[in-house]
Amino acid sequence: MNIKRRKLLQLGSATALTGLTYSPVWARTMGVKVLTGSAFGSSWRLVMADTQEDPRRLIDGIVDSVDKRMSPFRTDSHLGKFNAGGTTAIDGNTRLVIEAALDLAKNSSGAFDPTSAPIGRKYGFGPTAIPARAPSGMYSKIHLVGKKLVKSVPHLTLDLNGIAKGYALDKIAAALDGLDFVLELGGEVLARGRHPSRRRWRIGIERPGTNKLQRLINAGNEALATSGDANQSYEVGGRHYAHVIDPRTAKPLDNDVASVSVLAPSGMLADGLATAAMVLGPNASRSLLSVYNARALFLLKNGNDFVEVALGGFPMEDT
Image: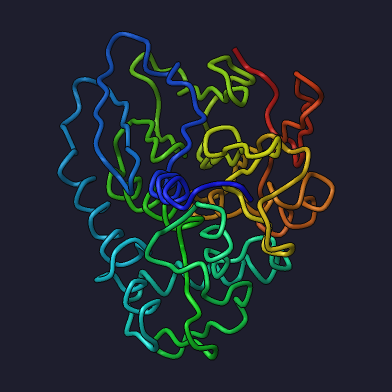
C-alpha cells in the first residue's frame, strides 16, 4: 500500500471514539438547554429542560473514571498496563465490560473481536499505543480469573473501544436517573423521560456522508448506536480503507454495508452489536441481534443511493 507512515500515524490518532451519525433535531426547540464536554477523543452532548440542574461535573467524572480504567490509549489504565505487560488487576466495572466484549466475540463468531486492534494499526487506525506487530484475532486467549485479567499468548492486547463508550453512556444515564434528557456520547444516543413539551424525544439518523436525515424516530428506553465507514476512512490507489476491521479476514471491512444503526437494551450492547453487525451484514446478523433482543437498520450501498434493510422491527420513520 502506497501510503507514508507519517500519514498512517495521523489517521490513527484521529480515530478515537468518534463518528457522530445522529442529527441534533431534538435540540432545536425552546425550553431546552444543550450541555457539551469532551469524552474519549470525541464529545458528549446532553439535551435537557432548561429548568433542570446542570450535571456537567457528574458526567465528566464518569467519563474520567471509565477512561482511567478502560482506555487503550493510556499507559496507566488497566488496559494500558495489561497490553504493555501481562496479568493485571482490574475492578468490577472493567470486568463487566470485558465479560460483555468476550461474550459478544463468542456469539458473533469473531465478527466483534476486542483483540483485533493490531490489524487496524497496520492500516493507520486505532490506538497508537498498540503495536501493529502484536498478535490479533485471539479473543479466546483472554481470561478473567477472579479480579485479574490474564492472557495465554504473550504480547496479546485488548481494546474495548467498541463497547466501553456504550458502557459509559449507560453509567451516565443511571446517574441522571429521574431527569428528562437525551444524551449523546461519541455518536451514541440514549433518552429518558420526555421533552419539556411532554412529547417524546426524537432522534434523527443521518444518511452516511451527508447532513440529511434517513430516519427520524421517537426515542424509547433503548440505546441507539451506529457504525459506518463514511467518517473514518481514506483511499489509496483507488481502494477505500475504512476504520471498521473484519477480524475474520484481518483486513479493513469490504462489503456493501454503508452503516448500521442498532437499538438495544443498553448502550454497551448497542455499541458492540453495531460493530459486529457492520461486519456480518444483515443476513448473518439476524440471529445475533435476536440473542440480545436488539433491532437494526442497515443502509446498503446501491450506486449513489442506499437501500434500507430493517431487522427485528426497527421503527419506521416517525416525523
